[in-house]
Length: 284
Image 1 (cartoon, rainbow, N blue to C red):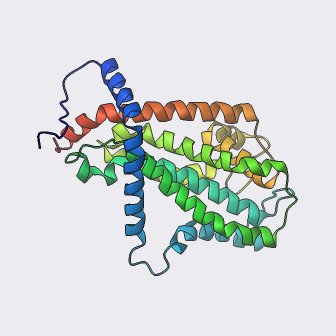
Image 2: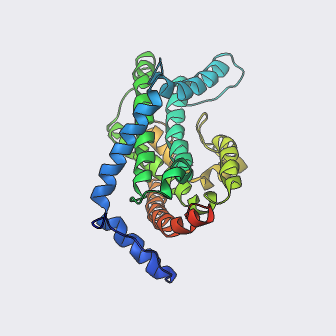
Image 3: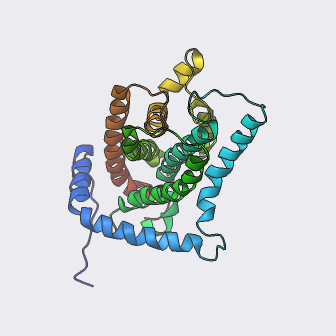
């Protein structure tokens, strides 16, 4: 037992705490990846153990939501003009990107809640939990992409070289969602009201994001949607894959850079706040 490392948390000022957190982040990067992979494999196996349909349950939410809007459009209950892109293909890709964004945001927000039992008992690089969230979201998106070929077969398109940029757009969309969720973690870990408010709010944000319809040409709705950071990433990523309208690339670049900075700040803030969160929650 004497060979085990001992971590002593002492009072220090804010900048020292962030410097220590950054040093720990760099020093433990290899251990973080290995631990995150083991946790990811364990959680994935546990998720589908005893499930008859297994991976199909990953595809169901995106597919079901898409089919609802496809049915409404086909029944002329709603009329949505998507230009040269067939609406079923348009709405499925939109839902796929929204699932990636929303999954990372909600997963990042609840990253400490799922591991609450281990946080006060085991010392490990806590940033590994974020990698697990990202890989779980990536798995969900990857499996859901298996439903895309049938849509492309039924609604063939003329492809352009921009299709090669779609994986980049998908990754940036997930990164944005994870950074927004993570920046709220220190508060959400102490007050469950915030998590519930975010879950409720995302139902409204869905309709303030051009998931099931194109970005309006003008009006208040367009202004509100353009303030939504997910809008430029979702619209541009879908345009890279299917063609159609796209927001300006400088906005995409700005949102992506801010997402990276927020992600780094969120990781450091989580590592600094975690000892206080554990003590506050009675785990100290």
